[in-house]
Amino acid sequence: MGTSNTADKVVVITGASSGIGESTARLLARNGARVVLGARRKDRIDALVKDITALGGSAVGFKTDVMKRGDVEALVKGANDKHGRVDVIVNNSGLMPIAPMAALKVEEWDRMIDVNIKGLLYGVAAVLPIMQKQRQGHIINIASVAGFKVFAPGGTVYSATKFAVRAVTEGLRMEHKADNIRCTMISPGAVATELPEGSSEEGTRKNLRDFYKMAIPADSIARAIAYAIEQPSEVEIDEVVIRPTAQDF
Ligand code: NDP
Image (cartoon, rainbow, N blue to C red; front, side):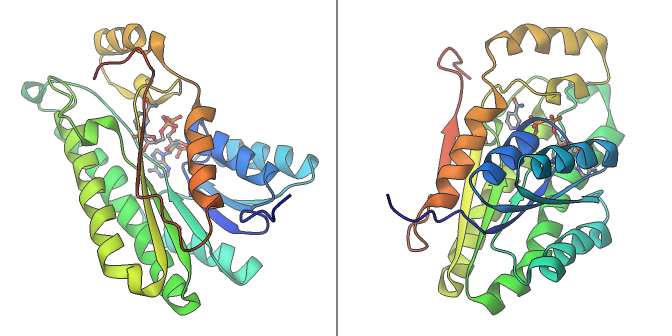
C-alpha cells in the first residue's frame, strides 16, 4: 500500500458546523488529517470535535464568524500555533437566501457578499503568507453549479457570489503556482444540507424543498475534497462539478 498524502496534514475548514463542512471534517479526520474547525455555532463545533477525538482523530474548534476578518485570522493562527503549519484551507462557509431581485432583500444581498465572497477572501488572506513561507499549501474554495449558470429567478445575487468564487480561485491559481500553492474549486449541485432553509420566505423554502428531493448526501462532496487533498503535491485538481445525476441545472 502507498503512503497517504492526507495523514497529518493540517486542514482548516470554515462552516464546519453542518452540511458539507461537517462531513468533510469527519472524513478528513478519518483519513488522518489534523482538522481545525470554525463556524459561529460553537456548540455544534464542540460536539463535532468531541466526536472526532473520541474516534482517535485530531480536531480543534473555534468560534468563527467569517464576516469578521479578525475571527478568520484567529482560526488560521490557532491552527498554525498548535501544529506549526497550515497545509489546506477549505473555504466552505456560505449562505443562499433566494428571492427575486424585485423583493429588494438588500440586507440578504449584503450578507451573501460578506460571507460567500469577503469571508472566503479573508480565508485566503489569512493563509497566503503562511503558505508562501512554507512554499507549500492548498486552497480549496466551495463554489456551486450556480457559479457556472445564473440561477434565476431568485438566485441572481447568490450566483454572482459564486461567479466571483470562480474568478478568485482561477486568479489565485495563476498568481501562486510559483509558490507551490494548489488551488481547487469544488462546485456542487443540490446537496442535502441546511442551505435551502436559508431563504426568508416560506413559499421559496417550500419550492426549494421540492427541488432538493433529488439532493445527494454531503459526503459525496466531502469525498471529492478528500480526493483533491490526497493527490501528490505536483498534481493539482483545479475544478470539480458534482451534481445529482437527475439534476439538469
Ligand atoms: P449548510 O447551511 O449546512 O452549511 C453552511 C455553513 O456555513 C454552516 O456551517 C454555517 O455555520 C456556515 N456559515 C454561514 N454563515 C457564516 C458566517 N458568517 N461565519 C462562519 N460560517 C458561516 O450548507 P452547505 O453545507 O450546503 O454549504 C456549504 C457550502 O456549499 C456553501 O458555500 C454553499 O454555498 C455551497 N453549496 C451548497 C450546495 C447545496 O446544495 N447544499 C450547492 C452548491 C454549493 P454557522 O451558521 O454555524 O456559522
